[in-house]
Image (cartoon, rainbow, N blue to C red; front, side, top):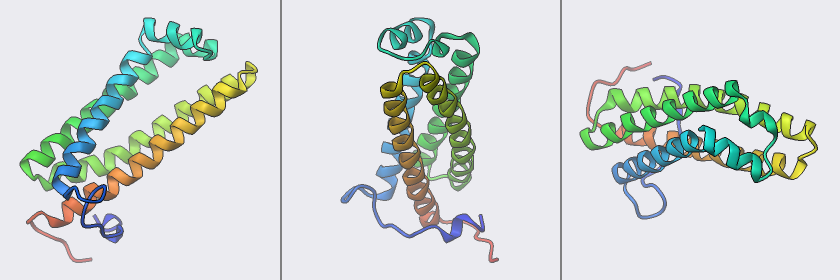
Length: 162
């Protein structure tokens, strides 16, 4: 993990919470976010989003499928992180760090599609709100990766010198 070894060092998560507990909390919050993705982009959830001002593109089957797949990936990734936190597993921490980066790229691409379609539908307020939420989730993801990498550094195991 050459690039991830250069991560900033932190000694706790959210002030007084230790790294292991922070990893477990991040996993639980991430699983909640994944579940929200699945519920929000189900058939009923998409109808609700459109009634709340989302563009009609949210109801399209392809958008719902892509968001559903991303929701499943977020759920699985954070379930692995929960296991890594409880078992103190270095490999699962590494897997979480890399898979979160890949999932974030996918979420960013899909969210940009929704923002552009909302701007094209003259739903500027929804587009700006959606973009704000998406950026907050990206910042949360970066913070969670930093916490997980610092937890990974505290675990015993073989370290490769580069």
